[in-house]
Image 1: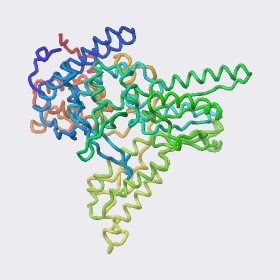
Image 2: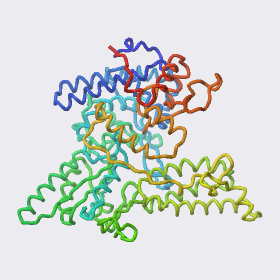
Image 3: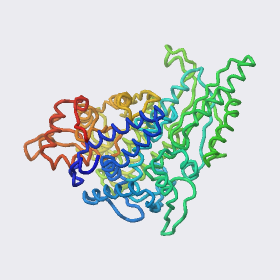
Image 4: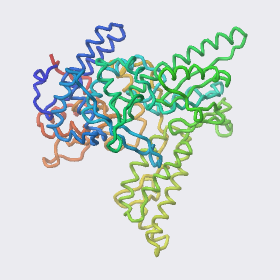
Length: 588
């Protein structure tokens, strides 16, 4: 649709619901063309998406509304006003219409911690904001195709898939006594830094290859010194995770083909042993399961050849063959097999069980994070405000296993003792009873917690296991019917979390979608805000029915537009099915 069709003249007046609907319709048509192997239709739909006003608007919005959107690149330019964002939308139009004139700016190299509480650093390459917006725009017409050819057990940087689903898949593959006992715990050496540009240019289905080539060859600026980039992709680019998946998709197929070859060979010899070869991958981290060490050793050269074609290799020291009895670490978890104690569960016929719990490294980082947040010069309110989001975030990530939450009690006790030492140091002349009464309060569980009458420190031991369901494979999130299945499964995961906060109740009532733009709130990178349908100044309350959740951008738009607020109120009354009943007018 043209700018005139949208009848929009400023960033504040963009109809986000119509824009998103238009993009989704075009992306579904792109998937249909790809599935029918109609290359002309694929290029036509990619062009329609890339040149569309709706896609340009959404690209700018998605970049500027995330945390990274407040960080500039080498040009120092921020898109921090509606006028600048509108200008960026117009600039994207010029670039897409003149792709061969485009030259990407160098990325800005910064060093960030490897993980929460980690003292180790890793490099991050930050493109300029306009380059990130352009990457997001082209991603809209690349990702639907890549999704259609992605490995089924690949869970990293894909819509409606996350690290929890990867761990649940591993548990499913290993939980039986007859499950594979041998694991290739693989580590790709400097994956993002070493991927061959020639491979990406050949295998990335982008409308304008010159644009991709410019991104790959943009170079790096470190302390005002320019360095050429002849290989790899910067960790920090919007499109970099997708390019990683482009490089590694197909790994499952080559392992499967080799497994079938080995299986035919051993069957001819009268051996009925199953190969049980499976690959579970999250971005550049993956494991391979197998029924014997010999089998894994036979498959490993095939994997090395696959990686070599992409300029990659397995790390010789970090890649190792282990048994499930020894255990292995994956995505911060430790996975290992232990004998079943029949006295604990005499109904189970299993002789062994799979344990999934935070790795010792993850637990050590958690305690480092707690230690860094407890400062004797700070009041307890500041400590709680700093630590609570971190404790909840860490706890929510690891709470998908009963064995994880059993470790929470030990960690919670250690947090208690660290807080006790903080209080004793802060008040050296006071006795234990005085400290206890001053700094602890009774919670709804009638237990004592560190805090004040207004806020309590999050207690890790009160967090219960959260059941995560298997994510269906082979579904493309850009096809409406398949997206509904994926959203339902994600929603099912979320509804297992019965913390019962006001925000959660409101989110359930509106079906998990933003009442303004219609996109899913679950997993959104954009800040989510509570909106009073009838404002407090007009007599509105904090009552459940007067509240809804909106993206930050949508919230700003709704508060300035009375007519739009009335539409939001109507959708809120309809309830969770509002989006299925909504008819969005065509852009034609």
